[in-house]
Length: 92
Image 1 (cartoon, rainbow, N blue to C red):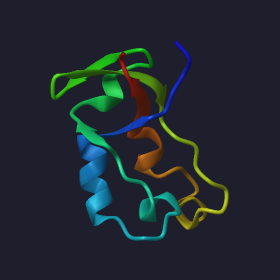
Image 2: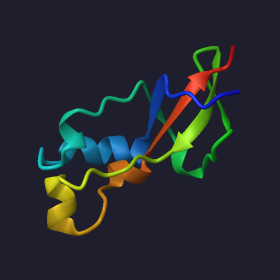
Image 3: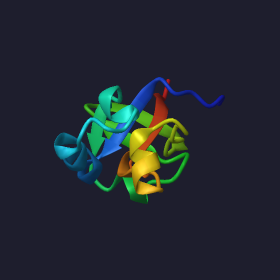
Image 4: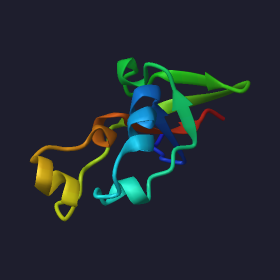
């Protein structure tokens, strides 16, 4: 199966953090997850996630930070969004 990124997931804790985060980060203004998943950080690539009677597979964990991100420049490290998201595709 070729890696696809048609679906985005965010960890419950990361979603809560994102609600109270400032708009300093480049991604914070734009990122929208399709699904919020409990304990997403414990899932590895290739893991199956069942949501609403459908099955999805995680094809990529985490996301790259942009060098021009104000949050990254200020903190000197990636924000929680970088590790708290995953991407995948619906199992056909």
